[in-house]
Structures are given as structure tokens and as C-alpha cells.
Amino acid sequence: MRAYRLGRLLVAALAVAGLALVGAGATRLPVRPPQPDGTAAPHRTVPAPHLPPLPRAVPVEVRIPAIDVRAPLVSVAADAAGALEVPPLDRPAVAGWYRLGVSPGETGNAVLVGHVDSPAGPAVFFNLGRLRPGDTIEIVRTDARLVRFAVLGVEAYPKDRFPTDLVYGPGDAAGLRLITCGGRFDGDSGEYVDNLVVFASRAA
Amino acid sequence: MKATRFLVPAAGGVALGALLLPGTALADTTVSPPTTPVGGTVVLTATGCNPKSGDAIFRVTGPDRDQNVRSTTAAAGGGLSAELFTAGFTLGTYTVAATCGDGTPDGSATLTVTPIGGAEAGGRAGDDGVGTMATGATLLATALGGAVILARRRRHAVTAATH
Image 1 (cartoon, rainbow over the protein chains, first blue to last red):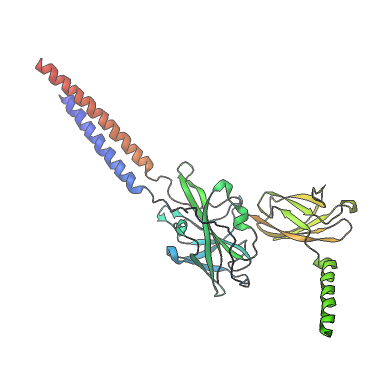
Image 2: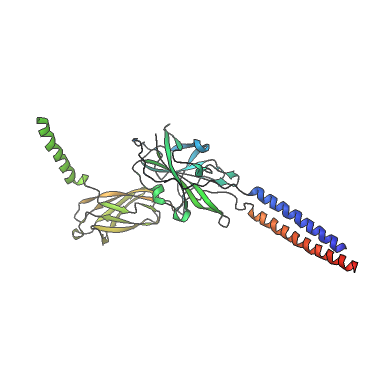
């Protein structure tokens, strides 16, 4: 009879501990970042307004009203392995401008990069997947110019098939590319499997 | 009328001059692909160079580089070509200008050396709660199994006591 009581106690303890762990785990499940619906053609040719290219100037802020983003920009380049640097993870609300490329408004594609999330939760580019063609992206530069871009489309690419030419390649007009992570989160590598790219062209 | 007579030949002369002046010749130098991650190989081609005139020289200038590359092969579509390995290149945009073996320039093209791959722009914690939930579910399953065993033993004990 005593063994039976001990058994009941053990079963109850296991059940309570199990329920507690399931509950604790459920509260830590991260929110999945929105993904593009794939209906937009991200690199289609659109009749862009005739705008003279701007001279080079460092961009200092990015604003995306459709997803409530207003973030300072820091300059980034590449690490020793040749991979694109990202802003420091302890400043998840900051985005980076790839300074070895053109600046926003110059002829060519300017590139911005930002985290999708951080250990603290969603980061500056968490909602890029919600952007739709026609949404506005504004860049403030050190020369006090505000450059407006219109979103052409949003696309997700596996990281091992990143479209280098579409992102960094030359262009006849001023373009903008925003990069973050997306797709499935691989718990083993601790990384998302895709990169999400926003394609935009200068509108004003 | 006089103006027309003057303008038409003048315009023709300007167009002909543009075609003949070496400095305004069509760009006969190509880089394929024009954009490569650092460490990639690109093919430089001077389509306007005659291989019989000798090797073409491709001058590659950019952020911290001024390098001459000599053509190695006759290009399939005409002209001369060479491979350029971009390991160690500083990221950025380079100008590739070709000069044919006879000394005539053959135009220029740009090459953009980019970062490798995409960006590691996700930073959430590796433990996303799934492991914790799995451990909890295992404990719950064990508790359920134990409860079943206890119930069976109790039923056996009651049955034995009534017989």
C-alpha cells in the first residue's frame, strides 16, 4: 500500500513538472516573421520617373511607414570571410547600409540590411514580408535630402542561392534593396534558411 | 534652306566622327558575369581585338587595385578573353579596360565584387521553447504510463481481495 502511494506521488509530480515545462516552452515560442506572398514580380521593369541621379551621401535613417519602421542607419561592409556584415545584435532597432556600394539616390542599387529578430524579440526588419508593391521607403541622407523609393516586390531566396546580381548588380537608375532573414528557422544552425529581399526603385 | 543644307551634312559628319573616334568607340569589352561574390571567377573578353595582333591586356582598376591581366585564349564569339579570379579583392566596383595587341583601346566595362551569399540577419535565441516543450511532453507521457500501471495494479489488488 505504501509503494502504491509513493507511485501515485511520483506520477503526480511527473505530471505537474511536465505541464509546467510545456507551459513554459509555449510562452517562449517566437512569433514567425511574415513572409512574402510571392504574387509580386520583384525585379520587373517599371516606367520609373525621370530623376537625375544624386551625388553620393551617407544615409542616416530609413523610414517605412507601411510597417511603422523609423530606424537609424549604420555603415556596414563585409567580414573577414567576405560575408555581408550586419548591425550589432545588441541594437536590433538599427539597420545597416552597405557602404561599399552606392548610396541611396545614386545610380545603381543601394543595399540596406537589418535583423529580423533578436533574443529580445522582433527586430527592425521583422515585418518586411508585409510590404506590397507601391509601398514607400524613405531614406534621409547627410546632405539633408529625403529620397523616396517605391516597393516593386518582396521575394525570399534560400541563402545558398542568394541573387547576388539582382541585389548588388549595376542598374541604370537609382534602386534600393533591403535584406533580412526569413523562411524556416533551423534550430540546429540557429539561423533562418532564407534571405528576404525587398526590391524598390526611386520614386522621388 | 541654307540652314538645312548646312545642318544635314554637319549632323552626318558628327555621327561619322563618333563612329571613327577611338575614344567614342562602342564598348567592346565585356565582363561575365558583371557581378561576382568575392572569390568568384569572371571572364574578361575584348571582342574587338584581332588575335593575330597579339595578346590583349585587360587593365583592372578599382578600390585598391591596378592590375594587368593578359588574354589567354581566343574568345568563341571573336576577340580575346582571360579569366580573372577575384579572391583577395576588396569589395566594390572595378573598371576593366582592354587594349588590343596592336595598341588600340577596346573599350571598358565594370565589374562589381560583392559579399558572399546573403546576410545572417536573424538573431533570435537558439532555444526557442520547442526543446522545453518536448521535455515537458516526455514527462507527461511518463506520468500517464505510470498512472496506467498503477491503475492496473490497483485493479488486480482489488480483484485478488474479493476472491
